[in-house]
Length: 299
Image 1 (cartoon, rainbow, N blue to C red):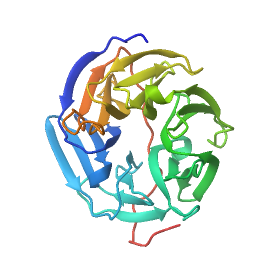
Image 2 (spheres, rainbow, N blue to C red):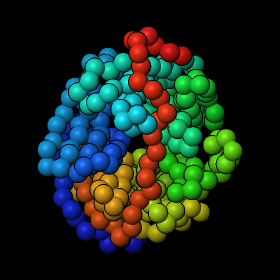
Image 3 (cartoon, helix red, strand yellow):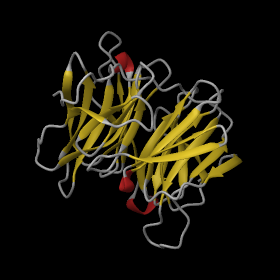
């Protein structure tokens, strides 16, 4: 497979066990956020300043998203929490129904119409997960079922095409989005990785409409066309890339989160790698979820 040109910008040493869900928030020098799922830590870097906060939640963190009012929404295993800023106390605002028993959130991202979209997984159960959406006026809605390990989610610049990863099935799927509702139609698998190629994980979409797909166990990020053709790969010096996002004032740098090496405890992993890949990204939206005025969980 062709290796794509990628200029190394740097590496953010984070020491995560399972770094995930990179998020770029513009304003001033801009802020890059990500989570360490296994430690329930929220990391962020603004300019040259780097910080970390352990959130007081009794479940692993899986994703962080921006709210339209400037705050944050983070997902734990079964609960969505609102934070006014990274060091704020998390307030539970929604919870996943226990259907089926043992289901938990995995990756998540804001989509058209201010909804939050998230995939789920039921450990040890093939096709036990689903694709869910959240919005305060709609509540929690289940869409696609039959997902084994819901993962990376993204949209093209026009919001007309949605991409979803099922790591358990090794697939990347796309679906057309209804312009009037923001809801996706039936998914079509456009890429399937063989087990020896690694597992498709988180993703980002660029301004040319291509998907940048992190490959767990593959030490790389693939660039994939909307039809599923792999244009090539950029190599990451860690066994387990987990996700990626375009960051910086011009969205011209690809930030790749990684996890610790699951085969060699002494191997590299857990840091964030920054690469210029010759294209810019699509701005990721925000979640239309107002700041909570109480600590009650809304369902």
